Image (cartoon, rainbow, N blue to C red; front, side, top):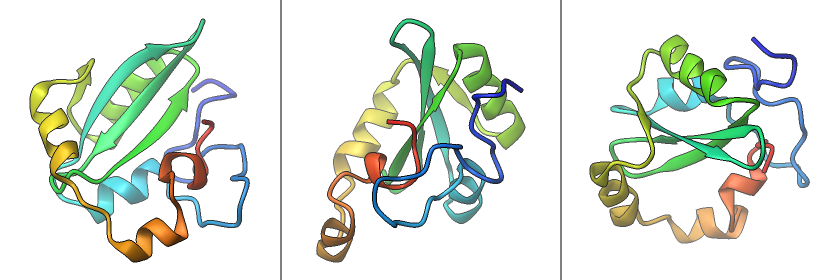
Length: 116
Protein backbone atom coordinates (compact mmCIF):
# COMPACT_ATOMS: atom_id res chain seq x y z
CA UNK A 1 0.00 0.00 0.00
CA UNK A 2 1.34 3.42 -0.93
CA UNK A 3 1.89 6.05 1.77
CA UNK A 4 -0.65 8.34 0.07
CA UNK A 5 -3.32 5.68 -0.55
CA UNK A 6 -6.49 6.04 1.55
CA UNK A 7 -6.86 3.40 4.22
CA UNK A 8 -9.84 1.11 3.67
CA UNK A 9 -10.64 0.98 7.38
CA UNK A 10 -9.61 4.43 8.58
CA UNK A 11 -10.31 6.60 5.53
CA UNK A 12 -8.19 9.08 3.60
CA UNK A 13 -5.47 11.06 5.38
CA UNK A 14 -6.77 14.44 4.24
CA UNK A 15 -9.42 15.95 6.53
CA UNK A 16 -12.69 17.32 5.14
CA UNK A 17 -13.11 21.10 4.98
CA UNK A 18 -16.17 20.96 7.20
CA UNK A 19 -16.84 18.75 10.21
CA UNK A 20 -18.79 16.07 8.35
CA UNK A 21 -18.05 12.50 9.45
CA UNK A 22 -15.86 10.74 6.92
CA UNK A 23 -17.06 7.41 5.62
CA UNK A 24 -14.32 4.96 4.76
CA UNK A 25 -14.55 2.67 1.73
CA UNK A 26 -14.94 -0.31 4.06
CA UNK A 27 -17.81 1.35 5.95
CA UNK A 28 -19.56 2.20 2.68
CA UNK A 29 -19.27 -1.37 1.38
CA UNK A 30 -20.36 -2.95 4.66
CA UNK A 31 -23.38 -0.68 5.09
CA UNK A 32 -24.86 -0.98 1.58
CA UNK A 33 -25.76 -4.02 -0.52
CA UNK A 34 -24.40 -4.68 -4.00
CA UNK A 35 -21.54 -2.18 -4.10
CA UNK A 36 -19.41 -2.14 -7.24
CA UNK A 37 -16.47 0.07 -8.12
CA UNK A 38 -15.65 2.22 -11.14
CA UNK A 39 -11.95 2.95 -11.64
CA UNK A 40 -10.68 5.78 -13.82
CA UNK A 41 -7.32 7.45 -14.34
CA UNK A 42 -7.43 11.15 -13.42
CA UNK A 43 -4.74 13.80 -13.46
CA UNK A 44 -1.12 12.99 -14.16
CA UNK A 45 -0.65 10.02 -11.85
CA UNK A 46 -3.80 9.50 -9.78
CA UNK A 47 -6.93 7.40 -10.10
CA UNK A 48 -10.44 7.65 -8.72
CA UNK A 49 -12.53 4.84 -7.37
CA UNK A 50 -16.24 5.53 -7.30
CA UNK A 51 -18.16 3.08 -5.15
CA UNK A 52 -21.78 2.66 -6.28
CA UNK A 53 -24.41 0.85 -4.19
CA UNK A 54 -27.46 -0.96 -5.61
CA UNK A 55 -29.55 2.09 -4.67
CA UNK A 56 -27.35 4.36 -6.79
CA UNK A 57 -25.79 6.07 -3.79
CA UNK A 58 -22.11 6.68 -4.47
CA UNK A 59 -18.92 8.04 -2.96
CA UNK A 60 -15.58 8.91 -4.54
CA UNK A 61 -12.05 8.17 -3.36
CA UNK A 62 -8.72 9.18 -4.91
CA UNK A 63 -5.77 6.78 -5.06
CA UNK A 64 -2.15 7.35 -6.15
CA UNK A 65 -2.42 4.89 -9.08
CA UNK A 66 -4.96 2.81 -11.00
CA UNK A 67 -3.29 -0.31 -9.59
CA UNK A 68 -3.90 0.95 -6.02
CA UNK A 69 -7.60 1.50 -6.82
CA UNK A 70 -7.86 -2.01 -8.31
CA UNK A 71 -6.13 -3.43 -5.24
CA UNK A 72 -8.67 -1.63 -3.03
CA UNK A 73 -11.52 -3.35 -4.91
CA UNK A 74 -9.87 -6.72 -4.39
CA UNK A 75 -9.36 -6.06 -0.67
CA UNK A 76 -12.98 -4.87 -0.35
CA UNK A 77 -14.09 -8.01 -2.23
CA UNK A 78 -16.14 -6.03 -4.76
CA UNK A 79 -16.17 -5.99 -8.54
CA UNK A 80 -14.04 -3.18 -9.94
CA UNK A 81 -14.72 -1.96 -13.48
CA UNK A 82 -12.32 -0.08 -15.75
CA UNK A 83 -14.35 3.00 -16.61
CA UNK A 84 -18.08 3.44 -16.10
CA UNK A 85 -20.32 0.60 -17.31
CA UNK A 86 -23.85 1.54 -18.33
CA UNK A 87 -25.53 -0.30 -15.46
CA UNK A 88 -23.63 1.84 -12.91
CA UNK A 89 -24.52 5.04 -14.77
CA UNK A 90 -28.18 4.03 -14.72
CA UNK A 91 -28.06 3.25 -10.98
CA UNK A 92 -26.54 6.62 -10.19
CA UNK A 93 -29.02 8.40 -12.44
CA UNK A 94 -32.00 6.92 -10.59
CA UNK A 95 -30.72 7.79 -7.11
CA UNK A 96 -32.53 10.68 -5.39
CA UNK A 97 -31.00 12.17 -2.26
CA UNK A 98 -33.26 13.26 0.58
CA UNK A 99 -33.74 17.00 1.28
CA UNK A 100 -32.06 16.48 4.68
CA UNK A 101 -29.01 14.99 3.00
CA UNK A 102 -28.80 17.97 0.61
CA UNK A 103 -28.82 20.38 3.55
CA UNK A 104 -26.05 18.45 5.31
CA UNK A 105 -23.68 18.09 2.34
CA UNK A 106 -24.59 19.53 -1.08
CA UNK A 107 -21.54 17.87 -2.65
CA UNK A 108 -20.94 14.65 -0.68
CA UNK A 109 -17.84 13.72 -2.62
CA UNK A 110 -16.19 16.89 -1.30
CA UNK A 111 -17.51 16.71 2.27
CA UNK A 112 -17.01 13.14 3.40
CA UNK A 113 -13.27 12.99 3.84
CA UNK A 114 -12.12 12.44 0.27
CA UNK A 115 -9.08 13.92 -1.39
CA UNK A 116 -11.18 15.79 -3.94
